[in-house]
Length: 332
Image 1: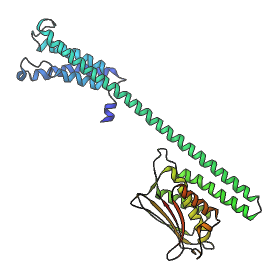
Image 2: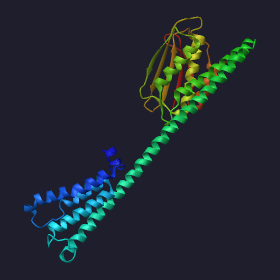
Image 3: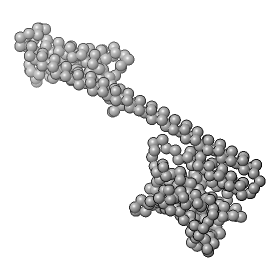
Image 4: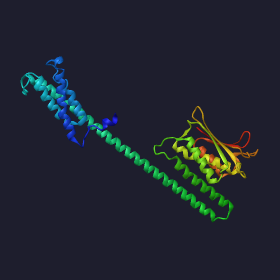
């Protein structure tokens, strides 16, 4: 119904249709008034003419509405206002004709301004829609450009690594390239032009698939159990995903070292107060008895701990039950 109203007046590019209707509607109104004349007598001269004028103006605009109003007024004067069968506008006919002119004028003015406002609203809505589409396209293009540049940086780091002989330096550049590439892939997966919150499940599945593919760990299975209501804000999505990525990378590097198969259980729960807990559990070798996260020199674990703190959360690495290890990320 709203689309029909926004399309009014009809046949804007074919005005003859509107004026043809303006000629027909008074005749139809006259026929209707004559058909009920026995019930109304000489009263109510405009009972069928007012609707004809309003309908014509509503459907076809001000010009046809004015024409219909003039013809309806002439017919009402000639057939139903005493003295009948004359076009005189003086004497006793003056008052009812003046009343008719005022009512029709008000109706036409209301309909005209309503349609003009409605047309302006439709144009503004269309302009807003086009602007929104353009913004989405530009945002998408910008996001892809940023992601591509990050991938280029990662590739340059990888090329640089090949020229370095020191094993530690090569490992550092390899880790840096992997993290830069991961930021690019995460940013590409997360972009939302509307700024809405990001669902957990598609994010976690995509990040896990990217890391396993990049690591060549085809034998590692992932099992997900994610609370459907768990969501993360766009500002927190990238650091949260990086913490998660470090947890998976740590499991691949240590828990599954020397193994071609294994299982990663990824569980997300949401507490009553809205807090979110992410657990990445492996069935690997587990942690040493004297393990302490604070004493670890791993850059990945330090990054995960720091990013979790920036989100006012906590990152922990615990022994699994019955075995393996559990990386736990808790966000308020």
